[in-house]
Amino acid sequence: MTSRLRIAVQKSGRLADRSLELISGAGLRVMKGANELLYRIENQPIDLLRVRDDDIPTFVADGVAELGIVGYNVLAEHFPEDDLEERIVMRLGFGKCTLKIAVPDTATYEGPQSLEGKRIATSYPNILGKWLKDKGVTATIVEMRGAVEVAPRMKIAHAICDLVSTGATLEANGMKAVDLVLASEAVLIKAPHAPPADLEHVYDMLLRRFDGVTASTG
Ligand code: PRT
Ligand code: ZN
Image (tube, rainbow, N blue to C red; front, side):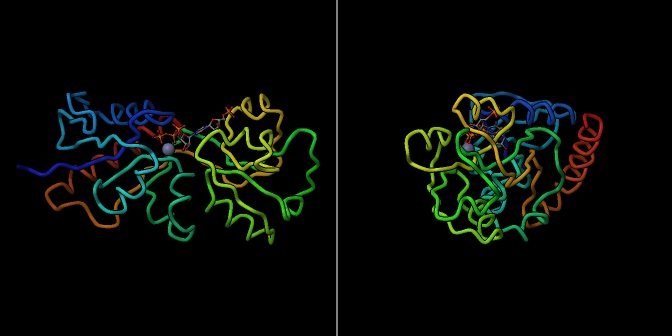
């Protein structure tokens, strides 16, 4: 069996369609087969590994996939900051959002110090923990997998640290964004080791084409 390159992509969710568009834009013909986990590329020795976005950084770091498409926020939650740039091949210009501190509309916020001694709900405990440390603030991080925006209303936390794109979710929950923790977009990440020698030309071609598609779509 000849070897094939693997690209880890989000199976379903906010990055799934745009990831497939990038892949088609690079001239790869995706065969949506019976295998839900793996889509074959018809015209290149490449497979798409379709997984939850949270699994993508680890799969790529372990070399299970040579490349992956994931939000910078997910990558930054998994690995230390000084380790991120070497994993990123390129920024992809879609999936843009910001990780922000938000508080109830009625609360006053005069900078990170206002969070001292408070409880903050988030799905990003590592990123938030580092941000608080950098600001010299001691607060309790309440980790939640989802529905972070309801935490203040449920009296679980005083503030939240969550992803924001339009701001509609915050508004609907009577909250306001007050500080920026991280700006994010989808990024292409690579495994620490070089691709197998027989696939090097496919790998190089792919990166050139992704670069071309990303440059033309801004
Ligand atoms: O199932 P799987 O684990 O793969 O998916 P997921 O549910 O963890 O992630 P998904 O599909 O929701 O998001 C995938 C990625 O899209 C994120 O990791 C971000 O990089 C990016 N992205 C861009 C966003 C948003 N915009 C976004 N607005 N991810 C989540 N949101 C959520 C946010 O958490 C909040 O609940 O949307 C709500 C806010 O949106 P607005 O428009 O009301 O501000
Ligand atoms: Zn996820």
